[in-house]
Image 1 (tube, helix red, strand yellow):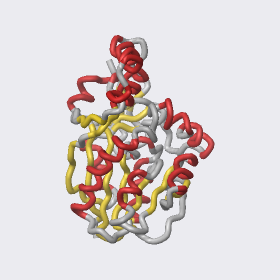
Image 2: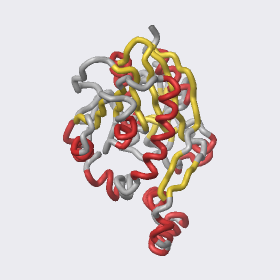
Image 3: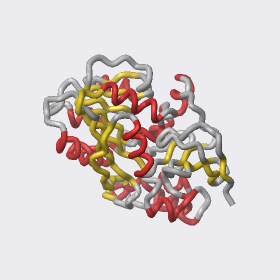
Image 4: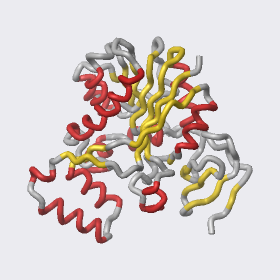
Amino acid sequence: MADSRTGAAPCPCCQATAWQSRWAEFVVCQRCGLMTVAQQTSTAFGAQELQRLYGPDYFHGGEYADYLGDKSALSKTLAQHLRAVRRWVPPGNRLLEIGCAYGFFLELIAQDYPGSVGLDVSAQAVEYARARGLDARLGDVLTTPLEGRFAAVCLWDTLEHLAQPRAALERCVALLEPGGYLFVSTGDFGSCLARLQGRRWRQIHPPTHLFYFTRTALRALCEGIGLEVLEFQTVWVYRRVKSALHGLQRLRPGSVLGRLAVALLRGLPGWLLNLDLPLNTGDTLRMTARKRT
């Protein structure tokens, strides 16, 4: 039976202080359903720790089989996000992407949204993006100086990585023009699949994923920092077959599914391993919010 804890640090989303233990290493806010790592503190990782977490191994053989090799699938997912952005933000405006990685989204928006900027903590990823003429900058959202304001700030699969999500989004709000938009995609901890799979849910993997948001938690967070939530949508995600199998063997080592993934990685032909599959398991969401004027 999970125990309850009170008097702890307030929830970064709803500011409640009642938490419940979950699977030993996590706690869940009893008001909004946010889950976070039990030992999570309010201080961000240092620069050296961030470079260790998000160095070359993260993008090749760690959480990703081959990030650059996945460009086709990742770009298809990002193109869907871009269609959502276009519904609200006319071309010609500047966008800011937090967690731009190798710059795949910056490439997609370069023509319609000139002057857009990307920010990432991975030196290797930023170097790659800058070599392709993109305005990618090394640093974190809390401390990196950025000039001017933006019509929209985008965090695609990034918010769950941040040690201080409330402070990060407060900075995003400060960087938005009046009436500007915030776009966030992240795992949906309140989804049916997340509830069904429990600790085995594929999106639970600290220390890179520190927070697991419900729609209630995201709404509470946004409304508490001057944003109006406009919509939530369930997202289709494209995955390369090879990467999907890599993730399965990494998250389920030694299990029947993990061993099956290893066998398929060894036995399937290359053309099949490189296919991009559209998936919608209902556990990834996209939120659109607007800065109150």
